[in-house]
Image (cartoon, rainbow, N blue to C red):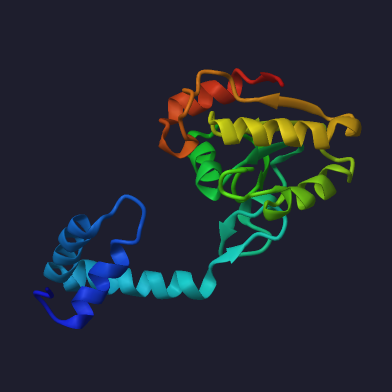
Amino acid sequence: MAVTGPEIERLIALLSKLPGLGPRSARRAVLQLIKKKETLLGPLAAAMTDAMAKARICSACGNVDTQDPCAICADELRDPHILCIVEEVGDLWALERAGAHKGRYHVLGGVLSALDGVGPDDLNIGRLVERLTGGEVREVVLAMNATVDGQTTAHYITDRISGLGISVSRLAHGVPVGGELDYLDDGTLAAAMKSRRPF
């Protein structure tokens, strides 16, 4: 039963679709937004409209930015010889927050998963192989989540690029098994990146 108008119920329903927000949390968030219309709701609506108009997927790495190529790919101070492969954009952002990687990235867009029907063609692996055959990359850092699917994906990528003469390393095992990069603290991520070893 709706306790308010359809516009507010729609906002609650849409917010409840976001990760980590259920209907109850979404309702509380909407109440806060409405209480602070001028300082929160208006600016949030404007920022969302702006993001919707300007957000782009980087054609080089798969990052989300307002430019293509993204700011990371366009940064000439980045080491082009080290490519860090991550599952999702959130993982890239987590590593950037930690300041742990000074090279470039490649976002796969997920992991291989037989249970979910996700195969190599469903991920950004073809583009990865294209990037690696260019000869500029000397090391690949596999920054996959320490899950069964993450490690399966890491092994698959290692097999696919084995003949290219590229050094392959992975994050140290300081990343907890079953853990996801986006939820780790910056210190743990930085230590894991510094302690990477051959895979």
